[in-house]
Image (cartoon, rainbow, N blue to C red; front, side):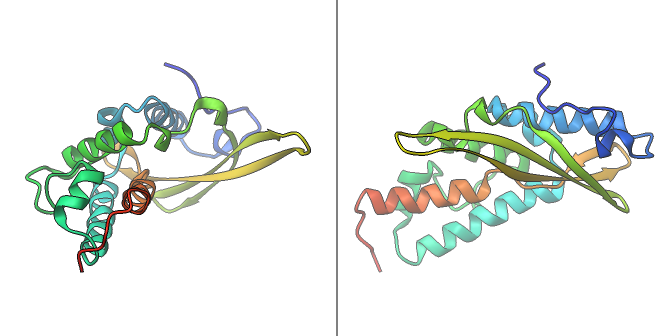
Length: 193
């Protein structure tokens, strides 16, 4: 496996007084690896059940908003979903994998290229059984007249459960919903209502 996020002895996570620091590192590293590999079955296995449910709820709400303006057929054409997210006979984890695969077939760029890697760990904050891990990545931009570098933040929230640490963050749902709307607009689909 590709080690994506590295923890130095000076990082807040490695220094955290927790017997879970190695387990946290492994979950975070697996999460980032599965995300950039588009390995959706592995990615969903790392998500907390509440995150899986939230993913479906966010896409359901986006579907509802778009159905106010577009037909089910029009929306199915851009989403790859044959029915409303709540009408599909799939578990939340199966829905996550199906919706992500449909989205990346239409928009491979929904998963950014690996130029964002590696992430640096900036901070980690424990809130009882949850942990916020602040990551950052550096991006260099060079054009004909401009040359600069910028650091962007990313936060991943983890939840401790009896079976171990799980990711409480909800990846991809908003990007997928944005693509649905954008595809309808770009295709010049006329409103049905």
